[in-house]
Image (cartoon, rainbow, N blue to C red; front, side):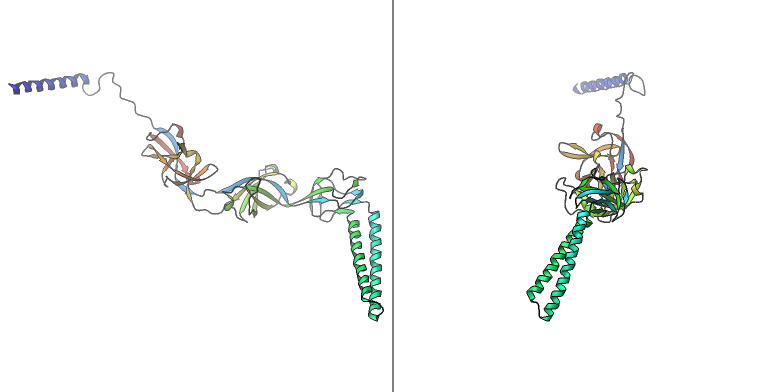
Length: 365
């Protein structure tokens, strides 16, 4: 009896299952009418780079001020009334050319008197030497005569210099960059007064500041290019690193570097113009590089997203040096991986992605 009852229950259950299946299907071959399947997540279109190695510092760029290869301030060493001024602002002058003449009447008379006294002292010495050789003069008299000559010569040389200083000459060749406003005919000139500034622009130089992370990559004689926007035509000048500071500037902590180049455009380039200098760095060991913008910071940890089997993979990375918008990756990424560089704010681990590779990370700018 019990066996029969179990068979009845089993049969009833099978019947109910069949009925549910028929009702659920509604019609053969599909879901019930009005049923909507859950929508599939659309892949996020992202840009990506192939992870490669490269040089962290390819070129070192800095700004500086152009100056002449030689610059000299002309300073008065005399005093008196200005008798002539033979230069104007912007003039080209040669080394030794007369710029200013000051009244030299008194200095000339003093020089001539000192010269005569020097000549007399020399004649006295000759006479004393003759007497000494004949035994008619003592060693003391000979010593005094020689001392008198030396003193007279010193006074003559001093007077001669004072006389010559009345004529102010250009110490170097170049262009007049500054002219003191008081240097005019009839004005009184005082010692120590600045007369003019002369710049030699046959060659030019620019001093730029380089950070401590880059200065070790700068070598003397390294090639460089200089852009001077004010010179027109956006022309690049080919330059060379001529000096690298052995220590930093205490005020800024940066390291001065000087580049020099021949000036092929004459006075089109002027001292004081601003310039952008690009220095070619020394060869470096290639390292894994990625854009700094591709690094996501979360809870004190740095991450990067890669595309793996059309899914976003979040990888912890160890970041090394950063120069500009490029970062060195010490650990966490391997060459050949596909690094996602866009849509990072909306991206989560495991999200479907459609990555378009637009370049290589090692050469990305």
